[in-house]
Amino acid sequence: MRVVATAGHVDHGKSTLVRALTGMEPDRWAEERRRGMTIDLGFAWTTLPGLDEPVAFVDVPGHERFVTQMLAGVGPVPATMFVVAADSGWMPQSTEHLDALDALGVRDGLLVVTRSDLADPELARDEALEHLAESSLGRLPAVCVSGTTGAGLPDLRSTLSQLVSGLPAPDLDADVRLWVDRAFTVRGAGTVVTGTLGAGTVRVGDELALGDRTVVVRGMQALGESVDPVRAVARVALNLRGVGLDEVGRGDALTTPGRWLRSDVVDVRVGPPRGASVAEELPKQVMVHVGSAAVAARVRPLSRADAPDDADGVTRTVRLTLREALPLRPGDHALLRDPGVHRVLGGVTVLDVRPPSLRRRGAARARAGELATAEGAPDAHAELARRRLMRHDELVALGAEVPADIPATGGWLVDPGHLPVLARRLVEAVVAHAESEPLDPGLPARAAARALELPDPRLLDLVLAEPGAASLAAAGGRIRARDAGGLPDAVRAAVATVREDLADAPFNAPEAHRLAELGLRTRELGAAVKEGALLKVGDGIYLAPDAADAAVARLADLPSPFTLSEARQALGTTRRVAVPLLEYLAKQGRTRRDAEGRHALR
Image (cartoon, rainbow, N blue to C red; front, side, top):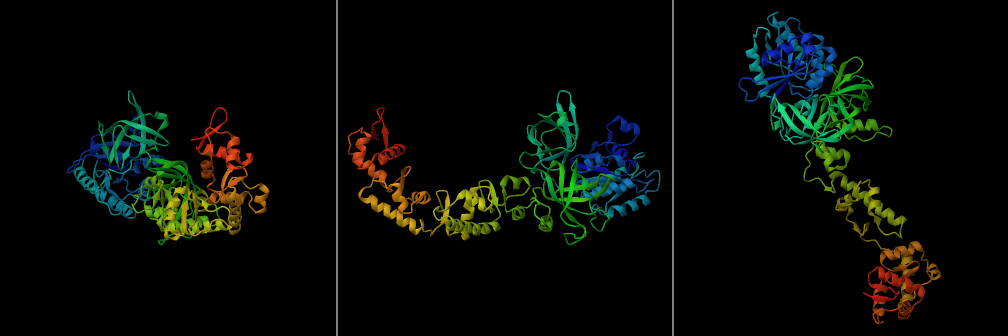
């Protein structure tokens, strides 16, 4: 299926033309037929010569009061049938519709001059072609017809066939984003939504995200028939399970779960309205139209209108804060309208849907500079270069293909160009820690991650693999220099003295005053234990590192079970040492106590 949207001034015969082409009534409401004016979106379809798939038409209202409805119909559609009446010529709403199409970047279409039986169509045709040539549509084919007499309809069908056959092929494997343009209930079926599927494929039973919730497709129709699957491009009606009519409506989007980022703050490039040579000052409040959605937004300029941020001098960069979060990607096109005077302010290209905060002075100007070369299309290397690191799922949700050569761990991706910077900072952090904390050998991994502003300590593995971090080693949850000397010389000498004291009496732990005389206070002793130079068996009780093995060897000569007193005598020590030492051995699983409080080796 192919989909084409009408465009043009009110009462220029758009609906009559669609009716003549399809034999169907596009105006759905009795009020529309009574007034002879489309006030909401209409839909019809037909087959065209030379095509093996039908063509569906989205018939949009032409009256200025219903521009929002018009944009909801045109937004997701790739091509337009622009209609101008021969007896009226170019009119104000013709201009507004063309401004909207130009802002949205629509490039494919054709001009249809209607009511050719009422006036010579050539003047209206030539005038319309001049206007169209100044827009994104450029030079279009033109056909003059009469919806009443049928004159010119065969040529129109042939020209439409050429138009739709030349449209770009849709990506059938793309992530789904279906903008809802209608929602209603069907007795016995429940909630049904309709929209134009521009890319991807939908199947019965698929789960789709609707905001923060998940709904299930229980049935589908396209062109009035049940189908499964539906492939883009297509007008489709989805019967949804798990959602009420009051929970979905025009402007909502059904998306592939986990593949789209919803954002209410976006950085965008704004082009001027059609025909303007410079970007004008934007109002603080605007309406953003994208897909079928119309959302109020607040504007924060990132670059001044008199200091454009690109070479052609006609665009500018702004930050939009949306009243509602929308599923957007870099490269999406949208339209800005002034909610006060209802005019098109320009077209928008989305550049970033996860922009950084702007807290520092001059941050907005710097941000505009960063985005000056942004292409407005999802690119993994460009996104990572700007962000330095990000979640794998988030990059995928931006619509970017993740190259295999991107450094990754724990679900995180790192810009390869940022790793050498991180390696240098890590070396500096380890050296600074060693100088400020000589008794605390090695920088803890979590502290290292904080110093490098890494969200996950596992990212340190990528940093340590860099040549710039070759002087570092990780062990026991700490990072230290490979040539680190361990304990300071004074502490090492004091520990050596303790070891000498213990050589002849290995279980006579030094008293607190003796440790203090040697300069071994709590921090120094803690460092010696971490280094493995001393063994702490209890509060204030420090022995040689092999004391536990030596104690087990002596206790093995005792009859089992043995008492605390027998153990104390065998070890040649006091109760002050024997009690915590036996408790330490028990915690190590090397001894056990029976119900009478006696001890035995395991």
